[in-house]
Length: 498
Image 1: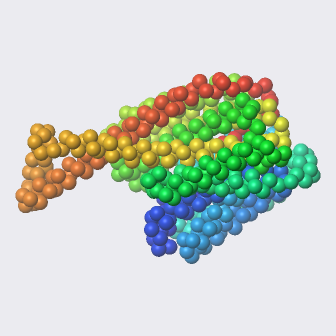
Image 2: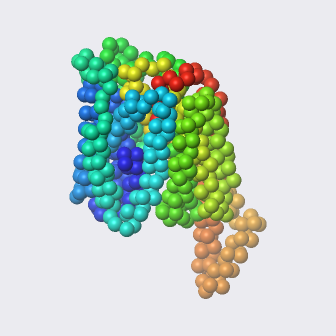
Image 3: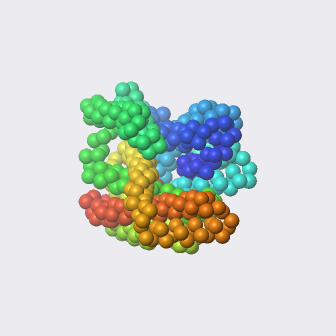
């Protein structure tokens, strides 16, 4: 449900804005506030769990998430809805790393990959199914039910967690140490990550560095992170142990996870956006095309979980990148005549690589890490994936806008009076409008507008092709990257997550 909430509200924005008398731009804060709060809590979730106990922290997050979901559904104004979405996002940010650590400590090494494979099915499918589920709820009920959906699940989760989950001895030992709190480091991290996430979410909308707001966020994020890094490397008990990055596998896997989030989240945005914007599909149809990849994952994640202990995880990660690159390469054949089946096949082939990326990457990430650092590594991994996704979506959105302008300028150069192909098309369209009963001046105007519309669509299509080729190059360069890491020992305690 937490992963589902990252995308389920996307299709409800017009309904939320209309219901609460808010503009489209104001309504998008419902999405941004959740993602920002989520990103701010992810890196410190392990630190909090070590101090208050993982079970207690996890149940507190579930309780807050459930109450915030109820209040979001009841919110009478946009301001209150955004406020409760911040609480919901913060609580959700504490769930992902705790879940990974709980599974890592619950299952023996030989069963751990399969346990996380089953867990990965839900986590990877949820953001994909979000737009489809959200669209169905909005079409048949009201947008408030998007949030009410979480309440029974949250109550059931609290009951089962209380009955089944227990803290391992090492978590109890960490709690007994009564380590001091680095308030300055905590504040710097929250402010820096928050500023960075807002900048990424609002950058293209505000014309990036043409906006004083974006420039301010950039300065705050950069200066804050520099001071945070310097402080965390000098204090005895840091909020985030940055020395973990000195271990080759941790540093490399965080980089790879960032790039995985960047390439895969952006592809999830590209396909439905193209289908709706260029092909004229409804939100529900576009969501179904993307959701098809989720059905494939239901079967492939257990397969990858069974294979993970038997093969070198570096080979599996390289295979995952190769499959993803091939899937993106198939999309370079994109045109205005594609069928719904072809759009489904794009997402299915890209999804084939996902299980071979997420499970082995986390296996490599935890290789050689002591148990007491599991919570921190889990938080870092989730943060890098989410930040990669934010960067990827911002990157793709910005490139599409700028490349569309470039191609439109190029095409417009050929639509000048005196150009034979242009004149021929304009005369043909003008004649067609006259046959429909339009007067000569109106027919000429309609013909010009029709040609301009065609040029816009063609420019946007060319921009999509360019962006996809850039993503192909990016994922292709990642194929040899896993072999820089060390291969973990067989059956080493190493969790795999999402």
